[in-house]
Image (cartoon, rainbow, N blue to C red; front, side, top):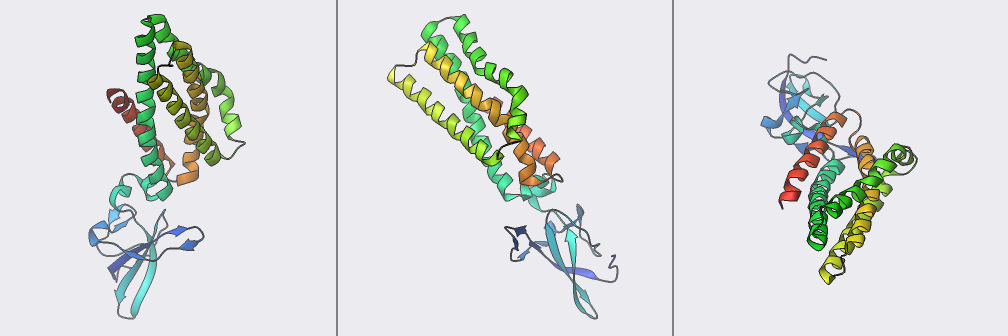
Amino acid sequence: RDRTDQEVRDVSVVRFADGRWSEPRPLARDDWQINGCPVNGPAIAASGAEVALAWFSAAGGTSRVKVAFSAGAGRRFPALHHRNFRRYVAGQSVWLVGFWMQSVAQGWLVYSISGSEFWLGAVAFFAYLPVLCLSPVAGSVIDRVDKYRLILVTQTSAMVLAFVLGTLSWSGHGTVPVVDMVAAMIGTVGALDLPARQAFLVDMVGAEDLPSAIALNATILNTARVIGPAV
């Protein structure tokens, strides 16, 4: 309810995770927010992704109410309030840059070996053929399995395949058929990995912060498409 006769004296944030509340963490006055607006006097009780405890000075003593607020980067990107999503962003930023580096390197390797435009196009064909064939059923499969474990399997598989391709190229055994086969296997992994990661977003941030998570995920993907080939 509206506490127009009182003034905000202090604000601390607590997070509910793993079945328990964290210890209150004081916030600087500049970070005080209620429903996205700076706190400058009275406060209105509300709910939000993070819960703050606000203490008010009053003649009858100190009272406590719950208010919604955001601080730092969370003001524009509420999904970053979630620790697991922040870790996801960091990991995906590295992996996607590496993925696009590898995609360009595969084509360069095939062309340097064969000198043929046909085989250069063929390696891209083999890389995206599994995505075309598996995409119609990938969503149904992902809905029936543990997304977290599936992503662990696909990301680990992609890492192993990258090491295999790098080792074969370094040792001089990276022939065109081998590169095409590895590209097809990476494409198969990607056909399951991409929809699994997209579906996993809601598990990390919830429906309320999903638009923010989708926007950040798309930003990471498209930024990596620029940085990876350039590197």
